[in-house]
Length: 262
Image: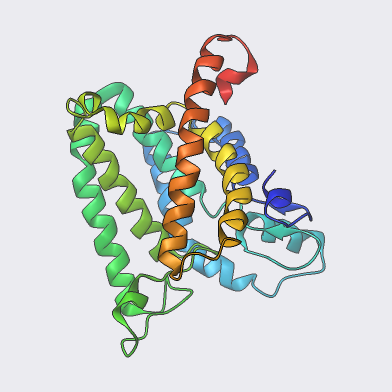
């Protein structure tokens, strides 16, 4: 879906294929205990820079192809690797551990989120200031301050992973803290709709924004990039939220079908 909608018709290892492979790996890795899974997640996070640097020039053999698919961002050749399979397995493992914590100790699990978020931000800031390990796009103190937050998404640097992971943790804590208030605010019901149809929403957003981005840009009635981005975002959400709402009801009317996985 993604390569063709975004004008990249060659075979691509993208978000969905990497996520699917990670879930398959999780079938086996979930048999480990929580400490082993946590250790593996930490190792994948902090050893990744050494691995991705070591195989940067690797090409021409089946083993190199395997290493690229597992670890490296490659946007040339016959196979594009947008999302290396093991580059974000750490986040999948962390999410799985958190899910286990919620099932057994829900209140305690959420109480740790703020601490985890601040530790993640502190780690990202320290690595960013050091400027070598953990950065694929180092920060230069002589540039504008905003460049401090421009990190390498492809390949995902530890700074990028820690920073965005922490922001997600804070958002999750905020939703949990406001769980009794949010249902009373009708304007925010879209969060529940998206939360109950995450995979459908993701796939649909590829289709909707893939068509919408070019259409809005063709009008040429905005002069700033942020205005264009805001219009694209709002326009996409106006389409996606109702789509997700009706899809959820359609899925619930077929509870034993394959739709329950989507």
